[in-house]
Image (cartoon, rainbow, N blue to C red; front, top):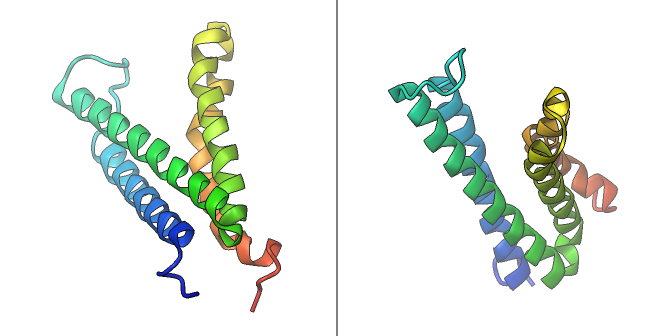
Length: 135
């Protein structure tokens, strides 16, 4: 079967497209609208930063879930599904951990959430090698 005809690979492709859009929104949105030095001050820049954050979080969750489902449905997508599950788990640890740990340790668990997309992006390049398809 070709790449386009399998349900699992269509889901994988859709998830990767959404993940790519999320990376672009993250780079452009956070680059153009960094949070004020004092934290959220209610300025236009801060409001746009929050909007960028909401879009990035939603796209991240949706794309990772699509990739996980593709990994469940299609054996050839399993590697991506496993890494998407790990990335989503790290995001959740970061999100919930920020509310659980003492304020002094906030930065540690926040990094789980902040860097999981970078680590997941790295899995795209390693998948064919680790999956035995290094043609």
